Length: 253
Image (tube, rainbow, N blue to C red; front, side):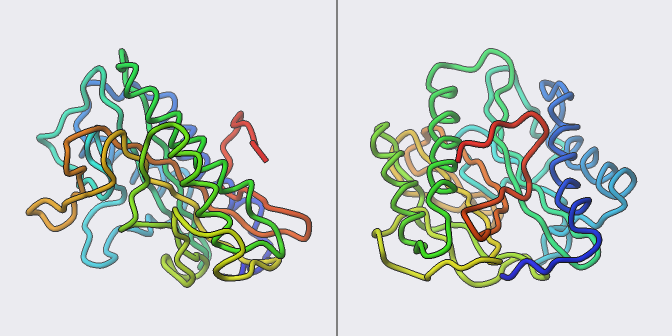
């Protein structure tokens, strides 16, 4: 989980951000989730000259997860699932370049989204930034999780506990687990050079989830909306750097 400096660092950290910047220009309504998967794969391979790191890992056949509405995470691309006006859809994407892996996700609001959909997306995004703001040398992972859950609870939402962030570097999932709940001053002590993801999954209703029969797709037990945002971050000498920050995205630290 230590971010090793190398000549490709500046370019590497921009690559995954560029995938989302490309998606920001795409009208997702009417596309199948498989079409989105294929679009992202072409962009990663051809435009980024990189490898989609999720494809083939743990037997997964696709380059991204696409989680719509009540789907919390790990939504599987399909020719038969069409993105509709009013949907919220989280796209969780990874890539590997020169041995280093980056991981990020964003929840897109498609067309005329309900007030509840807009609210859960906003709360999830702000919860992510609350966690990021807690990152600095000398802080603890419990501080990060506490900040995330505190923000969700303040907005009458819940955080999913079964899934969390993780260390990342030359491997996709490294120690430590970065929980979306915690106690201040508890957990791993953060130090300069550590890299990990912060990726709260926030539900409009209960926190409980269930996995569908495909063995991948995780949904809310009560059928209510869920949203997620994720960045890969590095602990710096005086705070935190968001490695997957997208162009025009406001840093909230």
